[in-house]
Image 1 (tube, one colour):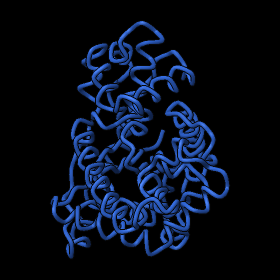
Image 2 (spheres, helix red, strand yellow):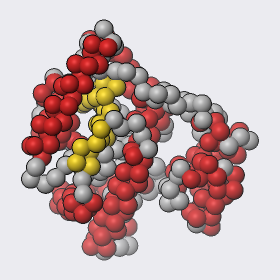
Image 3 (cartoon, one colour):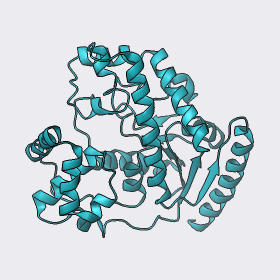
Image 4 (cartoon, one colour):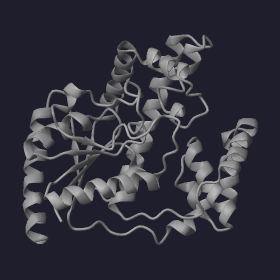
Length: 316
């Protein structure tokens, strides 16, 4: 078994650039933990690193499926385990990084997801209920059936709300009750660090990222996906950047309005990510600051080199 570096933080904090630099230093591949970067053809809106940004570093678990293919956390676990097992046999230390906290929890804490398997008919009925009565009504139903699970899910997070309701209704047992015994402590080979920035600086970076996405052709990417038959009802097309631009492509909303909405929703998403990762077993947080990235990089590198030596000696 070889060490595993886990690098987390909110969107636009600077994970990609730091992960690539660390990967180049350590000769490590990167394993993506991003629930949107798994989709082929969805590059701009998912902030998928370009070939130039990857700088020759091998990246795994990117471009796994087409936007209309179902993909669950369990699927991610299976793909990750295959990659990680192969790297372990080769004695290669990877860097696991991304903003999808559930993916990271699933593979670092042995998280087992409760049965039953997804029920498309039940989920469709619940989604229809959300469309008719609103997200708040569906979320309130979860509060009544499983208040413990509801406290851990943001009222606007329809996807997780529907899954929790689906499992609870189909099994007759609260979703949270089925999750209780699933998590375990991190194994000694995991080095789990987090990145953060001052809120105002992070929001400025988010706004700038959205502007760059638009300039890079996000509207055209969305138009192309719709033209290929990927409808707005698909989970992939409900991702940030796609659901906001669909009305623009259809001529139902001005681009300026959609951009403002996307920036707002992305800022809210970053805040939820920060809340999630603060509850995770991150062993050390590093504060990044504009103009001081090199100083912080050296601190992170020094910390990781010490921890890698420590972990390597403990698992020999």
